[in-house]
Image (cartoon, rainbow, N blue to C red; front, side, top):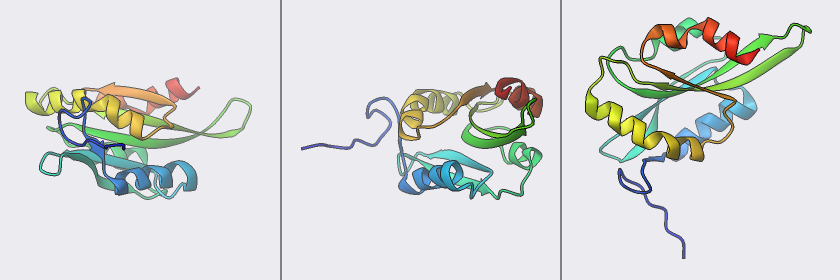
Length: 145
């Protein structure tokens, strides 16, 4: 028998809701989304999708979707052209934890991050950001090249 535990103390982290896994796979494989913003639903004790961005949305749309005073997980599909003129795409995992967010939220997101990343495999790079300058387009460009 196998059991799947969900909850704040279940193998140190919250599980990801099925629609969250599907949204990530749609971003990764089908390019249906430019980004997906995830939040922890404490009542359901799982990570859920808060918002998805269409492929036409910009990086500014993505950063504007991150709350000023609360933590989130986010995945961003970054398209760029290499110095050899090749079109590339890299998936960034962003752990958004602004300095102004509640301590409880910071702790909850920090302890659930590894479980979240295990359930959604396929990130190329990770960014931990506490303010908008740490999740700037230039940061992504530097990491991707």
